[in-house]
Image (cartoon, rainbow, N blue to C red; front, side):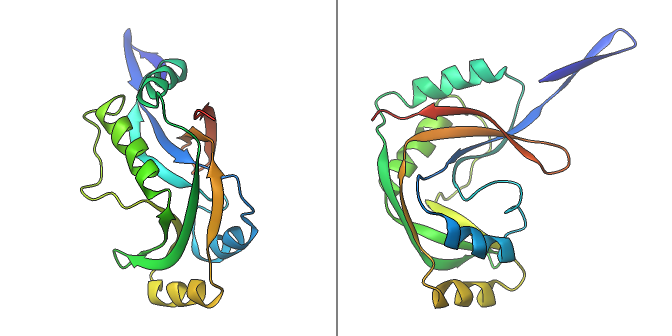
Length: 178
């Protein structure tokens, strides 16, 4: 959060943040695909979003403490992302075929705890976005042609801040129980 004084009044600026999982994995094939099809590929590595962009004015230490409480007892887990799928005629997802229950549990815990009252998707589908394009059918076919998939271990939730010019800055990594 930043604040500045304007004629004696303090104006608070909300910070746009996102909660994500970065699976420990060889992501080279996914990153090559994203470089062609995902406009944010240069700003943030391949990830699974569990807390969609939210405006927040809490100090990162306070927010991290609340995330840790929501994550209590949640263990590291294996995730497998495959089955390239078109979503909303704009996105290309790799669906979670393993680890979906754990991803959903983290998502729900965050929105029932520190993100209570924040907007959230009406339908949550555990996935990794690998493309966003007006040519979604072509992108899905390209992903299928190279059998795009990823398997890895999720050990932490990370919170990143979205900067005004699109840059993403990791603020904190919060480990899951090993």
